[in-house]
Length: 167
Image 1 (cartoon, one colour):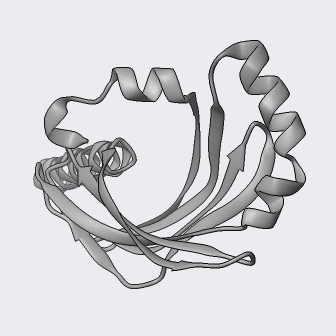
Image 2 (tube, helix red, strand yellow):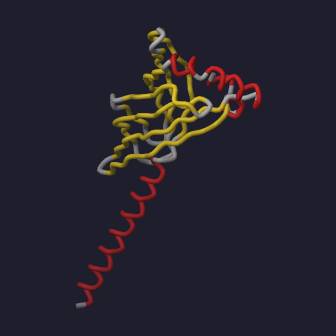
Image 3 (cartoon, one colour):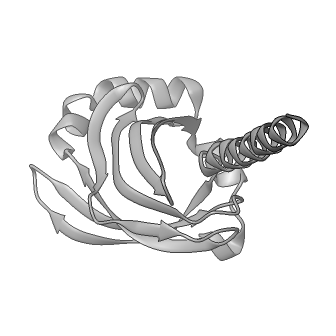
């Protein structure tokens, strides 16, 4: 009877330890950083400004993350002006970085339609507010999650965090 209790206790402890490890790693998967490394204009017209933006993603997790899909709506001064979408899978290595080109589409008509609001807000605040709102579908081993992404900053705040090597 003692052996059975010890075996059950040991397996329970091992199960809890594994659960805690993978839960911690899943939480770390959501804590990746990114910076813009560069961009290339793909298409420019009155209907669409298509850009390939290269992002440097960095992970602190012990597990590599496979981003299966990324979608973000782009907002400038609170107005939706475009989106970011990547449906090709890419990998962010464990405790490493990866440079990924991602497609960005901006609607110039949405920008021109709101140019007066943008100009007034920028003149008043002497800064430009931008926001991204969407999700990333992430998989690592047998852990899968959809991570909501909400990012809001101003141009001044963003440029403060850049170093000369990341511009």
